[in-house]
Image 1 (cartoon, helix red, strand yellow):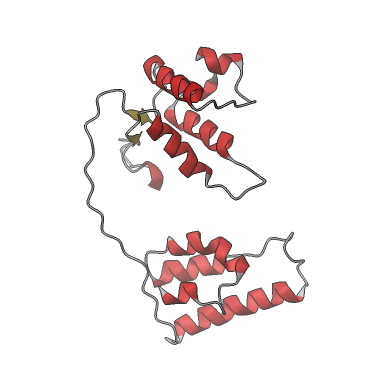
Image 2 (tube, one colour):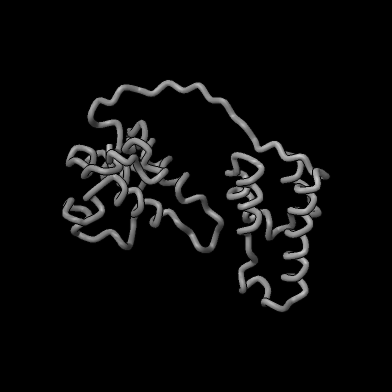
Length: 186
């Protein structure tokens, strides 16, 4: 949407929040997301001119949306995908332990790429670490390992790329996992 690229509203602070704002599915959710944006206290104190200008921009943007001066069309994308068959080894299961065979694929790729994780203990390498209890635990560990405080890295993208290079097609999530699950627990 053109408003999300408007330099008046979206300075460097807003750009940090752009991903959250882009997750909006309609005008109301966009307004809620904009309202929830805040400026970190490390960036500007509560009484600074920068913080006041930021809050003023936020209110102007919401007012302009309400008044119809800005037309919002949240981005829409239609994808066609082929989902490969699950052969028991090619998906990391979010809610199940990582199998010994899958651990072997991961260890092989770690060695191939010469990754050294200082936090990886003997328990990790022997398969007894808690990170192997579920795909969720292991993915969280990988995400943490790929974080780099000195550079702006997309650790989740790097973790997913590693899994792909290790031979995983994807992650198998329980139905509606990202929305809190279904009432029947399926």
